[in-house]
Image 1 (cartoon, one colour):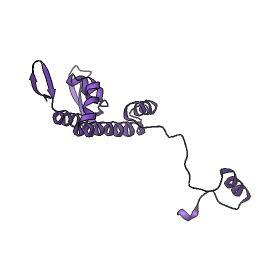
Image 2: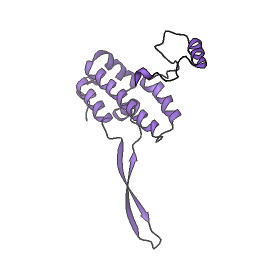
Image 3: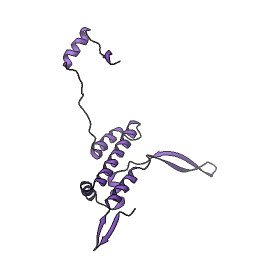
Image 4: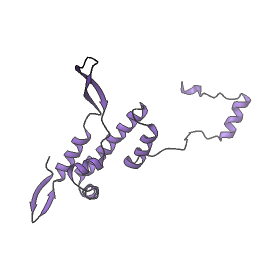
Length: 157
């Protein structure tokens, strides 16, 4: 897809709608692709074997390289065009889905998935536990120890 809408005096003008649509198309590709391997058998003959394989995770930088657009220019377009901003958010969401699905199924290393998610998509590691009890943890533990309360809140079942 040609992203340039006109060129005058050596200056190219990008169509923000074409940029946005190209980003959406790039990040809408299926995560799984069919691959055909050619296997050589013992007798010297060959056989085609089809298998499903996860595609590499699409990245915004990869899209930029493919279209020869610096990431800084894409960032500028994101600030000035709602279409491009929406498409970049779609791209980040697609990367999150890829990382979560493949990290949970261990198709990619979960530690690497967390690293990429933190650095590329804005996801954060939540290290705090939230609770809705008005009692302190010590008083709850004391009540459990004394048998005054159960560990499981039976009101929720």
